[in-house]
Structure formats: structure tokens, C-alpha cells
Image 1 (cartoon, rainbow, N blue to C red):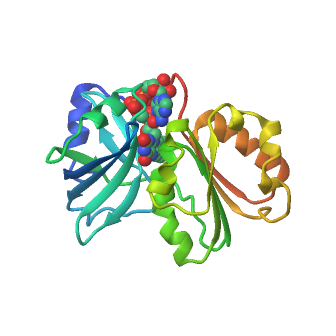
Image 2: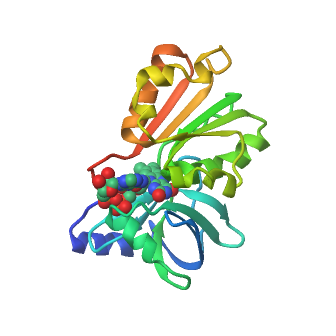
Length: 238
Ligand SMILES: Cc1cc2nc3c(=O)[nH]c(=O)nc-3n(C[C@H](O)[C@H](O)[C@H](O)COP(=O)(O)OP(=O)(O)OC[C@H]3O[C@@H](n4cnc5c(N)ncnc54)[C@H](O)[C@@H]3O)c2cc1C
């Protein structure tokens, strides 16, 4: 969906029942000042949840943003999203303002296929915006007995968030330019052996980090790579 529309078109889109679902906020939790988890409730029986798909939320008169369902339960009609409250954009400010009992419309999830269950080893890279994807994929990794590894690049104040979210098999890195540096990436343990050579790689988060990591992976390993930048410095509504 386009991130910016004229107000009349945004109104029309938000009213479209086939795409948008009425939801109410049950609970909001700040895991710290920049990570907010919200539990929404509504009739989500028409939603088809696939790993890597995103829901769209209208965040202003004219703008929509993408967010990932981190957990859902169709019988209870609940859906959780983990938001990065980075403070730079209209979406971040809107989400920060949301409180229990607020009502809004959330789109059905859509996107590309990122998970291939036939591949035993799964490697997932991302940042704060990828935490929801990580939470949604973890139970599937366990159920389907994958060998899996998460790499996260996180702001210093967010280093303990994967633990708070109950994630497992993760390594946390600082954001101090590391995943922008091909030589540094080349030294990572995954390139030290053949272990991850044929893995399925899912790279999301910051566009520059994703692009750099993807390049090093392509130069060195043979596995499938799925990559999608979720945000880019200076760009609105990617
Ligand atoms: C498929 C998909 C799934 C996504 N899932 C999630 C999710 O579950 N949770 C989540 O929080 N985000 C998620 N995102 C990312 C989110 O849509 C973007 O971060 C979006 O730009 C936020 O909109 P905004 O209005 O806050 O900022 P924008 O108006 O888009 O951008 C304004 C400024 O803020 C900067 N900016 C945007 N995002 C960040 C950030 N994360 N950190 C620092 N600066 C930033 C931009 O570079 C720009 O300079 C997802 C994106 C995609 C494409």
C-alpha cells in the first residue's frame, strides 16, 4: 500500500472493509521508553497471518505505515505489535499516543513469502523494527525443529529487549556502524565455517545494514537470501 495518499483517498482506503478491520486497544506496555508493545482486539478471522507479512495502520490524515504482527490468537481475536518509538516520524508519534480503549482500523497482513520450511537452518537478522518478525517466527522455528540463529543490531538502551520478549538463540550487536562495514561483517562467526552455507537468510530492518549484509552473504555463502529494508535514514514511510 502507498504510504502517502491525498486525504480523500486515505479516508476511502480506511473505510474499505475488505482491507481494514476495526480494532480496540486492550493493553499497552512500554518495555522501555522506545519499545512499546500493544495488544489489539477485534475480529481477525479474515486475516491470513504469514511470516514476514505486515499490517498497515493509518498514522495521520494522509499517511499509512507498515507494522508486523508479533503474536496473534484468532479465537480470542487478539493481535500484538512491537513498535519502535524512535521519535523521528509521524507514525512513531501516533503510536506513542495510543492508549487502552482507543479504537483504530488495521489492515489485513500482506507481503512476500520469506520463510521456507524445507530449509533446516534459518538465520534472521534485524533491528528494533524486526523484533515483531522475530517473535512471530520463533514458535515456528521450534515447532518445525529448525536450527536457527537471530542477529540483532540494537540501540544501546534496547540491548535487553530480546530477552524481555522471550527470544532465544540471539546475538545482540551495537548499532555503531558495524553492519555498514563489509570487512567487519566478514569476520562474523557465521563465515568461519560451512555451518550456515546453505541456510535461509531473512534480513530486515535498516536498509543500509540489510544491503551491506546481503552483499557479504552473496559473496561468501550459497543459501537463499530474503531481504527487505524496513526503514532508511531521511526517508519517510518506506
Ligand atoms: C514490512 C514491514 C514491516 C515493519 N514492521 C515494523 C514493526 O513491527 N515495528 C516497527 O516499529 N516498525 C516496523 N516497520 C518499520 C516502520 O514501518 C518504519 O520505521 C516507518 O518508517 C515508521 O514510520 P514513521 O512515521 O515513524 O517514520 P517516517 O515518517 O517513515 O520517517 C521519518 C524519519 O524517521 C526515520 N525513521 C523511520 N523509522 C525509524 C526507525 N525505526 N529508527 C530510527 N529512525 C527511523 C526515517 O529515516 C526518517 O528520517 C516495518 C516496515 C516494513 C516495510
